[in-house]
Length: 242
Image 1 (cartoon, rainbow, N blue to C red):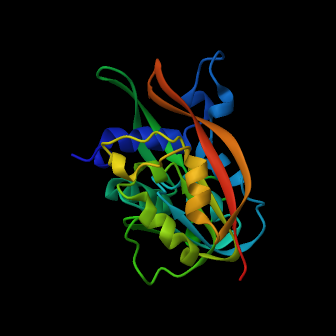
Image 2: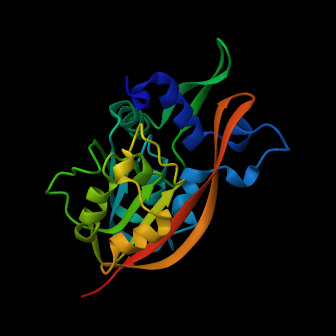
C-alpha cells in the first residue's frame, strides 16, 4: 500500500503542517529553527507581493497552499495522495480537522489542525494529480512552489521539462529537496549524476535563472521521542523573459 494513503502518515503530516511548536517539539533541547517548514517555504522564499496565480505541486495536506492564498488571487494545489487531498479539502471547508498524534505503541493524543488566520480558503482549488503527468489545460502561473517533491518522483525530468510552460515569464519557481534519492521512489537511472542543485541548473537552463539558494531545516515528529531532522536545499528561480 502507498504509505502516503495511510491514516498514520496523514496524521503525521497534519502535525508537520499545522501543529503548534509545543505540539511538535516539547523539548527545549530540540532544533526549534526547523519548525514550521510548510510556512517557511513560502515566507522565506517569496516576497509576499500580490500575485494572480500560484501552483503548489506536492501540496500534501495543504499548509503552503493556504499560506500562498494570503497574497495570491488563486492557488491550484495538487498532490498524488487522495488521502492528503481529502484532508486538505476538509480543512478548507470546515476550518478544522481532528487527528491523532502518535506518542508510542498504542498511545495517541487527539489534536485539531486549524486553518491559519491569514488563509483565504476560497482562493484554493485542491486536486489529485501526478506531477510528472499534469493535465494539459493547467495553464501558467506567476508562482510555482514544489517543496520536497522532486526526489520523490519516478521520473523527475518529466516535471523539469514541463516547468518552462508552467511559469509565466518573470515568474518565480521555488524548489526544495532533501536530495534523498531512494530507489523505492525514483529508479537510480533517473537520479542526478552529480549534485542535485547542479543538475537543476543544467535541466532548467536557459528558461530559468537561479536567484537564490538556502538551507531549510525541517522536523517531522514520528513519536514522542523520535524525530526526523533534515536539511532541505531550497532554490529560487526566475523565469527568463524571451
